[in-house]
Amino acid sequence: MGERGSAQGAGPDGPRLAALPAVLRAPGRTLVMGVVNVTPDSFSDGGRWFDADAAVARGLALLEEGADLLDVGGESTRPGAARVPVDEELARVLPVVERLVAHGAAVSVDTTRAVVAAGAVDAGAVLVNDVSGGMADPEMAHVVARTGAAYVAMHWRGHADVMDALDAYDDVVADVRRELGERVDALRAAGVRDSQIVLDPGLGFAKTGESNWPLLARLDELVADGYPVLVGASRKRFLGHLMAGPDGTPAAPEARDDATAAVTALAAAAGAWAVRVHEVAASAAAVRVVARWRDARQDHTTGRRATAGAAREGAR
Image 1 (cartoon, rainbow, N blue to C red):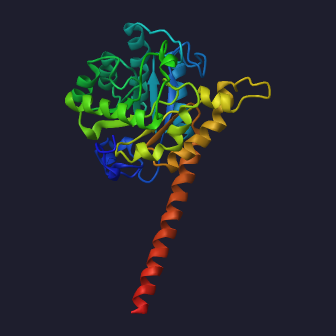
Image 2 (cartoon, rainbow, N blue to C red; image 1 turned 60 degrees about the vertical axis):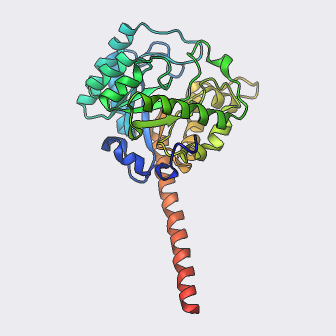
Image 3 (cartoon, helix red, strand yellow; image 1 turned 45 degrees about the horizontal axis):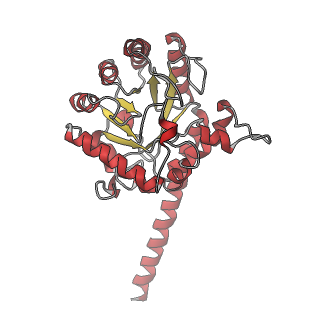
């Protein structure tokens, strides 16, 4: 995919971001996307926000903690999860999107279905976050092209009930970049503009454990392809295994938040456009720390160059 993109679009200040809605840009730092699960079977919160009133209250609380945008989803994508009927997904998602938008929130809809994406955009959502990258519903790309909404194309190989069996890679980073490049080509062919596209390496999707770490370690390679990059590591299984107890039992989802914040810092340092997290406060702090650290590094580099230039002039 390296030939398709331009490194000039990389990072939280890349020029590709200029074409995104203003609410999806935060000059100088990585955005924090807060998760609002309107599902009874989420792996991370067990349905605590399933009721629409509770979901809206949760979204507003995440905004208070520093979330830049909210990702509303009505279908669990945890490993092994069954599909939700489309009418049920619409009934879960649209009222919450409408109410959060009415409160002034920038809202993303987490769905693989074109009809849900279209309804959410009509209700005010500014971004469609599709874990299938358009593969689950052939109409999705046409909806994105028609509405002009920003669109997250995630790396995906199959639905939640089969994805664990699809964790087979030669070089996971090269394979993910190539397969994302194929999705970009398909989106373009359907009329989606480059300026609408955000990419996501799909941590935890057809990646059960060790496959996730090279993607994080080499995230700068995906960023350098030129598209804004979303990283969704929050509370995922590979962090649970990393933080396992002495007996090897994986840490519970809520016990993975510190590790999630650490990934946020690493992703921000690598130039990620946004991180998607369940608990916002620590990640909101992390992206600001990284932004200040980057500024200090830039100031130091600029100062050294200026000093070296002056020395050269003086030698003449």
